[in-house]
Image (tube, rainbow, N blue to C red):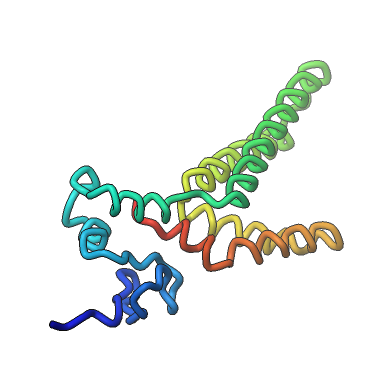
Length: 168
């Protein structure tokens, strides 16, 4: 009788010790049961999974609290940008000048809204975009540097990457 001593990462192919839920090489989720591995590969539907496998898959798909906070802040930022756009539209109707600032606020509102939705639903592109935006935000010395540095640090933590790597 042979026992499997390693589990191969489905993302990068790295051999991980049994019991490790996160790949040592890339940080992706490593399913622990054969049934979970087949579901991750798409061989079975999730509806056919046993409760234990569903629990394992749900554990990976859980949104960390920090991501929830960032998503809510992004959505609030979208709302404030929309309010600024409305205020600008109101003042522009009085002065007749609407132009570039309105377009800027509109793009910011849409961008924050899409980013907030992506973070809330754990889309991997949203994490990457947030890291890039925070890297640009590092230029806002000193407060922006500190806040965005903390955000980058958090978003690059293995457990956060693991939440974004679950199959959807």
